[in-house]
Image 1 (cartoon, helix red, strand yellow):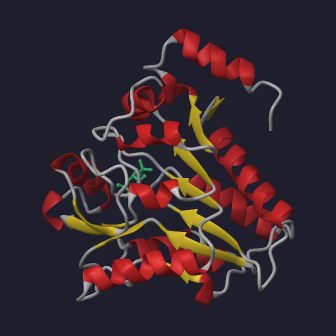
Image 2 (image 1 turned 135 degrees about the vertical axis):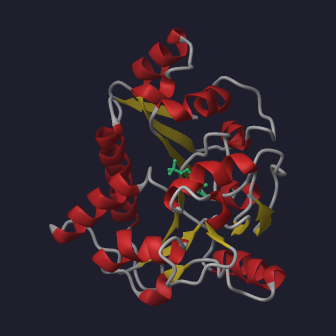
Length: 263
Ligand code: GLP
């Protein structure tokens, strides 16, 4: 696993955006051979989205032949709901770039048939030959997408019940009212994420320090879903200094040293 430690949120965002742009350009996507990008929501990736949008506006990056699959969506929020991940993605990313609408995939939280929706989503990913790069955020409790602690480490796209901790944390987007936060979501599974050619998890701020400790120094355990990244051939964690607060000084020194000359 690679661990990139950057001084602050902005430099994490810049590093991640540069890496995504590098991967897309190196792939040279075409209509017949698109680049498949997995995307998260949350506050962490906002800076990365901003940098990618800037590159696009400066004429340095095109998403014309990029296909996206988002990680998750709340059950019961339609795409016009300001807190739905559909709305979030459109407002914060898609409407600012040249991606084709048909190339965007987000689970439909309004579906009446959850099983079918999840099966179709898995099939759609397969039909594109899999995800090239899955970008993810990190929950304070170590969740990735909405795979809460205790999730099967080989899980596929399905319905998940959100923990009280996650509902509490996410209530900041719902007027701090936990009764407004949906209690269930559709989410890609940990197995779905792990099938990607590459997985890059972003984590910033001291609130993520405990999860980062378990991800990097802990053993692989379903109670810290992100720890499965240790099993990925191409797993990358990009975090800021604050998120390393609970790592041993030696661990931090090791990764800073080994990555010092790398992109
Ligand atoms: C939500 C999302 C996750 C995200 C996490 C962290 O629960 N389902 O995909 O990684 O929040 O969000 P933030 O980046 O705002 O800390």
